[in-house]
Amino acid sequence: MAELAEKTEAASPPGEAAGTPAVKTVELTKRFGHTVALAGLSMTVPRGEVFGFLGPNGAGKTTAVKLLLGLLKPTSGQGSLLGRPIGDLRTRRRIGYLPELFRYQAWLSAAEVLALHCELAPLPRSSWKDEIKTALETVGLTDRVNDRVGTFSKGMQQRLGLGAALLGEPELVFLDEPTSALDPVGRHDVREIIRGLASRGSAVFLNSHLLSEVEQVCDRVAVVDHGRVIASGTMDELLGGTAVRVRVSGLTQADKNRLSQYGRIDDEGDQITFANLDAERVPELVATIVSMGGRVYEVAPRHQTLEDRFLQLLEDEEKA
Amino acid sequence: MPPVLVMARLTVQESSRRRLLLALLILTLIVVGVSAWGFNKITTVTRSDGTPLPPEQISLITSQLLIVVTFMFSGVLALSAAVVAGPLISGEVESGLLLAMLARPVRRSEVVIGKWLGLAALVTLYAAGAGGLELAAVDWATGYLPPHPVELLAFVAADGLVLLSLGMLLSTRLSGITAGVIALVAWLMAWIAGVVGDIGTGLQNQALENVGVVSHLLLPADGLWRGAIYAMEPDTLIAAMRALGTAGRANPFAAIEPPPTEFLVWVVFWFAAVLTLSVWSFGTREI
Image (cartoon, rainbow over all chains, first blue to last red; front, side, top):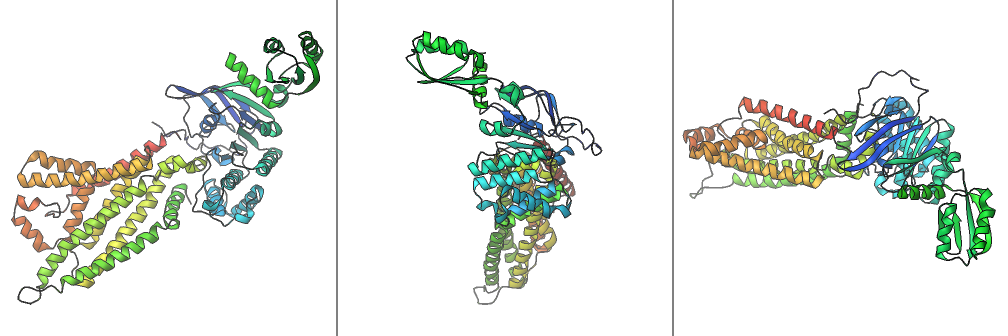
């Protein structure tokens, strides 16, 4: 059997395939025995975009990233990164990766870990000093440059991993749950880093289930569940609807069930949120509630959040 | 630096930074010091009439004691190699340490060969350094030097490399503790099978003899150990054992012939095969 997804370094002139997408997959499938981890993933991530890959735990997000990076072998289907087949060694020079399971050599200092990644990337030795300095500044570890990684907190190790992923100004950066160990300040910093990457033209593939973060930084998202993409598009396309929160009393459970004709509802007692309701139907909704004997205290339409849409998609998927 | 050498350097660096080398150095100095004192005591032994032992007898006793000491040294080296090699790859896969590195333009074969090279360099240097020091100490204490010291150190180092290679092969698929334990048990079984082969030779039982031959082919650790023994034995002892015929061959701490050339060729092939298998095994592993 050939080595797992390690293709020969074919000659690829600079700028080759510059017009190709950052990531493209066609029916990419991965099975572990009888378990389907990824079922026919087809998607395209344009260059320079921040792409959010969302899904609940176990949906297949990390499997997809590992397939794209050649760490797993697809059962079937195809994929390409920056115009080259997945697993191409030369392409990996232009890619950064922060794994979900981030761990770095505890016996090395932060600067030594980054130097190691500069060497493996490989970057010209003359650029290492500046690359390391910039990466440490970006992730806020300048004052720990010579400290052993073994003395770092989990959050600091994740910052270091992010710094390693940024070395060499990669054209495509995979960030797998990049804020899982970070405090609110760290999460804010990561959002700024992602925006910085996008502004200089790098594509970012962001795996996350922290929807508010994705909503703040992503241009485009795909929602994956049970190994399948159940929705994808730009943020505007995905969040076109309006959510309406109604504060009401006097409704029985049967009345609330009948209100499901207005779409998915989140019932929190006196507060009912209609996750996706055309604003034009709000008067009709209020009239229906009043006709049921309900007493309406407040009606608050707002833009649908990614969380509203995400939960709605998962519920629809469950019903299907 | 090519990735394969980067991986080798990292392996050596880790052993150094984790103070494994320092611990080995201190333990070795203690063992060599104590054994030098013990060997020196042989020269002070007297016969019942109070006269000192003749030099030939001192050499014979020293050579036998040196075989026992070397057996323990070789065993510790082999066991250490197995324990260190067991988690060499699986430990880094399980912890996630390899994930970020394998996303770089690094072939998995470079990871496997680089790690093997790093650890093999440590095993060889340690075998040569510590073994050479022990031989120098024995020479100083008793005036005895084995007839083939270079071959002795080469066989001891190769014995360690066998366990290192087996441990690393297992480490490409199994957890560190499982790989280490299997390698240790395999080493012990191979040694016992070698003893069974010796008994078969003494009893002129072909089936038992074959057990020894097959074990030497599957895991050449015991066969290499026999090479180390032969390198330590004075010619007079070898001649005496040869005179005993098959009975002289039935001794797990003695060898009357050097390992045959065919066996040494097989050992080279065995290393190549195990390394190739390791590269294939890790190359096809899903991480």
